[in-house]
Length: 513
Image (tube, rainbow, N blue to C red; front, side, top):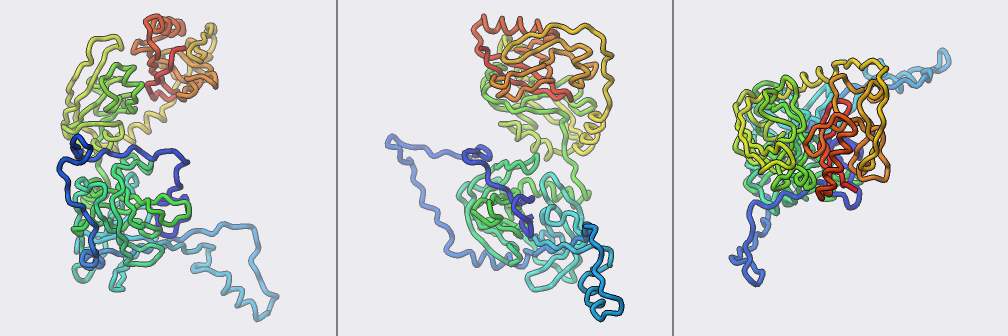
């Protein structure tokens, strides 16, 4: 909340280390063709900012509200006896008044401030979840000075959205959502909210970037703006110059907690779907594919023999999930889902989540049976989506299921050093030492040289090598043999399929020395 939060709290993000990028910039939707001199072939008139946004703001201010909340917090006991005046002292009443709280139980009221906006004249208000989280009382304060107690309709922690309901005596002034997907970098936008408790504040800026991932949740796709956003603006609207809501102001990057011109808004493209579900069901009902993903890096694309580093790499299929039907395999690269192109592994979860539960969708993928196989196959499979919320329960239960370790006693096999790692067969001792289940097969990594490329790739002891160059391995000698074959054939890198102790898979490309 950018209300009464300290730096580092939710909604206020510390700046990244110098030189570290937050996320790649989404390329513009269109390109400008240049003539031979490098000058645009068809010059456009310069787009200037509005001389004033007063006319736009005037019709919107009444729909933006200040959200105030209070929460009862139990005071932590410090073992200090209560202050008491000598018996019969007239100061006893003074001590009683000084130390007692509202209910005499050692609790106190904590207040916070945020912003919100009305989207339905009947009293539906939108804000951030972190603005009202754990609140005992929620009050909407309107521009005319009136106040209404708000009740919670539903929240979504993944996108940080909350829907509130008030009961007005007359219809409220409301605003409508616009189309954030049509925003262009450089477009003018206006934020209205309650920064530092200063209600009805209007700030103007431009769209600085789109598609920002700030690691706030699994569906990050923020609009970045330089319109001044501060603590207390959380939950307030970001308007376009037509007066439509294109974003919900949610977070800032700041070393001090104040605006430095880097603010983030949830795009209306994401918010409208979530809000619709919360209003209808009081909860979200997201689509679920039931797979685990990994990014397709340039190294992995080369290792898999793919034409380009794009798509989402399938690294596991959840047992009992929608994709547990043999149609998807580890190593498949999903390049399109339900008619929408998948450029990166970040795109797929968001698009799947926005797809209705129970819908049959076409999934386009690239598959290569082995690194040395003939051209990559282009396949299309049909999968009926499940519900993410049910899938999360299923995955939690499966992860909590105990594994039975193999009884010790088998003879220990010789270990082999390769690619900066020490590897060995999976025996009873290894299963016990690294908590590997009975069904875990492959070759266990027992040590990683700290100065090796393997260490740089994040490989750690206890990981299990399942495949080398897309061929299964069962013994340490298999890995050694396969690495030798790759080296003799002139290959510079080895594509390893690794499994963690919990069974999560990932591809890693390690240089062959």
